[in-house]
Image 1 (cartoon, rainbow, N blue to C red):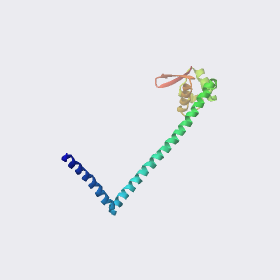
Image 2 (image 1 turned 135 degrees about the horizontal axis):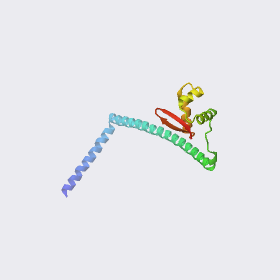
Image 3 (image 1 turned 120 degrees about the vertical axis):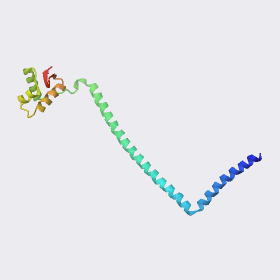
Image 4 (image 1 turned 90 degrees about the horizontal axis):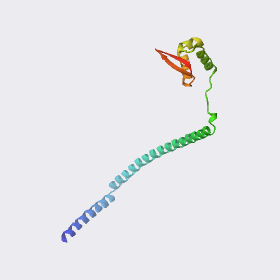
Length: 154
């Protein structure tokens, strides 16, 4: 029993000793100023972190708001298309596209060089782009013969 009392007494003295040294340090103005300075610096850095987090949250909220607007717009468009499927947009061909289709029907098959000559395009790319556009719109078929690409009417 005496041993347990001694161990408690020793623990008490260590605890009180630490408290008494802390009390002595608090009464020391240099130690007190150092602690206050450390607290102030920590507060500054914490405020900077909080400000940065708030800024990121604001940007996130703005993005979420824009995303909500886009989602609502898409839902409205989807509802309109579902209500009126007959009003879906169909691509109408320009006069030049109609002329190109007529020329392809007349010739049977056409390559970009032939289109360039027929419609006086400055470069082969213009004819190739027009034929490619009509192919993507489903008006023409594409056939590869060697290095040339020929288009035919579907």
